[in-house]
Amino acid sequence: MRSRHPDVKWAEREDKVFLTVVLPDAKNPKINVVPNGTFTFSAFAGADSNLYELKLDLFDKINVEESKTNIGPRSIFCVLEKAEMKWWKKLLRGNEKIHYVKVDWDKWVDEDDVDGGPGDLGLDGMDFSKFGGMGLDDDAVGDDLEESDDEEMKKTEGKVDGAAPGEP
Image 1 (cartoon, helix red, strand yellow):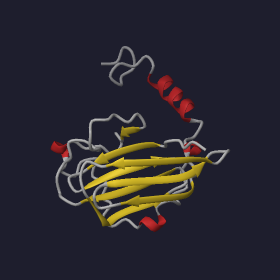
Image 2 (cartoon, rainbow, N blue to C red; image 1 turned 120 degrees about the vertical axis):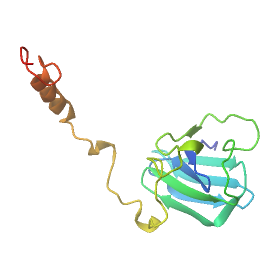
Image 3 (tube, rainbow, N blue to C red; image 1 turned 135 degrees about the horizontal axis):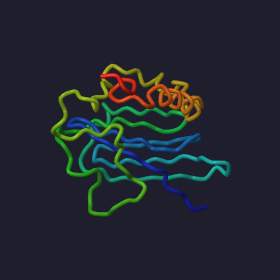
């Protein structure tokens, strides 16, 4: 049986790398990180229980003891502590481009923007044992969103800068 590759999203900070393996309903996930920076993952998923495997040779070394993993219903989230506090030039060793590894723009922060802006996830005190049961899924967004937008548009139609036509 031939294995498949799950999609992977990544972002970094000076002291850690965030890896998200996007694989809904992963069964029997196995994650291994070794100090030299090798990250391996395998799990079964899908209606046919297909095997998904992944091996990433990360750019630099990892502090395995301080790294954390959370297995959720839609993805596996890993916070890998870097062995040395420094920004990496890229995620992987070598020059090979891997099409299923992409930047996680929701978590991305530029090296210049590290002063606690929106990219500061504040994960230091997070209890990863309860992280997976948040109860949110893609259906959590209400269907009435479009209707409420239409009502706002009707209220503001014909107004310029918040004033009704003919008002100063």
